[in-house]
Length: 234
Image (cartoon, rainbow, N blue to C red; front, side, top):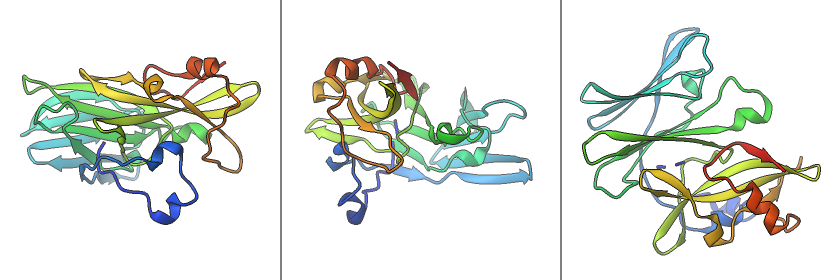
């Protein structure tokens, strides 16, 4: 992932509402805005352009999710399922960054599951188009509740990491579980253990940002997910 115009949190927000990992520096990205085109009152499409690339969001009537299409110079390169019903569920820009350090741009699209209700409507779906040596793209998709504009946090000198947020239930209490991931060989690898993660933050009516020590390490490891996802139970 969340990729790629990392906006710093304003100082006033940082002073009182900040998860532990949000103290680290963030990677900066290029980005282009997703333009929503209204065809009629029931149909929309999304359109974003970056140099030779065009990304389109197409709604599919009656289905739980539309399509995300990637073009280069008008030629269709990829067409993948998207977890959205309305094209205007793409509240974020398209982010551009060299994820795999091959000198070529990679493109990331984030959307909300607009048909969902309640807490499920806060799920963020990320689609990454990662360039390959033959000028095609590997597609990486995952979901998370961590719905900040795309950020990679610098946990040490050489590593910027993606944060995944899931919801877990333990002994009749709900917790946000935060895992750490790194891009490697075209996919996300969980590196939480290296940085003493995951951490748990209570899910309360009055929002809190403080990690709790009420979950044993064994339980936290049980909740740790290989790839970002929406939730699990223990």
